[in-house]
Image 1 (tube, rainbow, N blue to C red):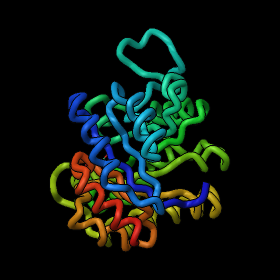
Image 2 (spheres, rainbow, N blue to C red):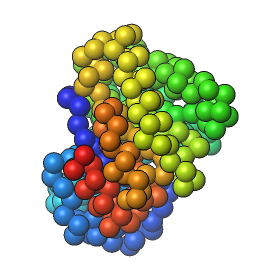
Image 3 (cartoon, protein in one colour):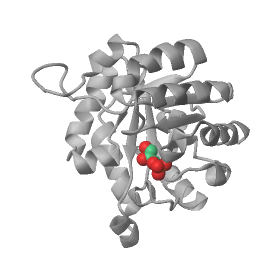
Amino acid sequence: MPRRKIAAGNWKMNKNYDDALQLIRDISATNPPKEIHTVLAVPSIYLKNGVDMLMHIIGLDVAAQNCHQEPSGAYTGEISASMLSSISVPYVVIGHSERREYFHENSQQLASKVDVALSNGLQVIFCCGESLDIRKSGNHVPHVCKQIRESLFHLSDDQWSNVIIAYEPIWAIGTGETASPEQAQEMHQALRTMIANEKSSNIAENVSILYGGSVKPANAKDIFTGEDVDGALVGGASLNADGFKEIMDALARS
Ligand code: 13P
C-alpha cells in the first residue's frame, strides 16, 4: 500500500458506553476531511459499534488496541485476530508502549502478534519508542531501530504493505511534552533509511510512519512539517471531537 496521510486516534481505556457513542456522533458532526485516512482505536467492547457507525455510516476506519498472539485457545480475557476480522475490524495497534510496560510484551511476542494479525487480513499499526533514560543516553535511534528489526524484519515485502509504524517516544506520551518537529523527523528519517538499507527502498518509500506523543491542535501543524512524518497517533486529544478535527485538518493541509 502506498504511503498515506493517517490521523489515528487511540482512545485507550476511556469513555463509558454513552460517552463513546456521543464521541462518535460528535466526530461525525465535524465532517472529517476526506483527503486523509482516519482510524479510531476504540476499546474492544465498542469495536462492533465502531464498525457499524464509524465505518459504515461515517466512512472512517476502526482499530483494535491489541490482539493475542495465538490464533485461539484458553486465554481468558483475550481477543484474537480472527475475532477482529470476523466483525470486519480492519486495523490493530500492536506494541504500544503501555502494553510493553504494563503487560510485559516483548519483541518476540509482538512479532507473533504481527504475524497472526496479518494472516487474518488485518493492517497493523506497530508502535515503537524510547524511554526518557534512553533518549538522554543518546541511544534513541539504535534502540527504536532494534524494536523495528526484532518485530517486523521477518516480514515479506507483501506483508509490509499492511504495516504502519507509529513512533511514540514514551517521555512524550500523556506528559504534555511533545517531541520537537526536528526530533520527530530525525527518528522517522532514521527508520526509513534503515528500512531502505536493510530491507528495500520500495518498502521504505511506501511505509507510513506516524508520530505519537502529546499531539494537540496547537502543535500538530508543526509536527506534520517533517518530510517523513505521515500523520499522528493521538491519545488524549482524540477524546474531544473538536480538538481531533483540528488535528485532522492540520494533516489534510500539510
Ligand atoms: P497522548 O496523545 O495522550 O500523549 O498519547 C499518545 C499515545 O500513546 C497514542 O497511542
